[in-house]
Image (cartoon, one colour):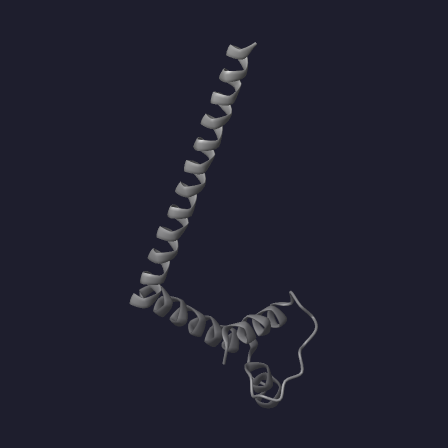
Length: 103
């Protein structure tokens, strides 16, 4: 079951959203309706599942590499922007200096 579905179910169970989406797939909400299970048990199951996935995503080597690549690329883009901005400012200063000398 995807994390987005579980998040929606948690929102419904916690009362944040009152609209219950109709699904054909079995979900924890269906368990509550059919088996009349306690809501906190289902919430606890969902939270444990989300925590487990979050830990796996944080510890994933591929995810770390992706984060590093994104950070490096963002830094490069930022540096390019700053360099081009400096060049534009210098060019403008030179133009202004030339105008003053000509006058």
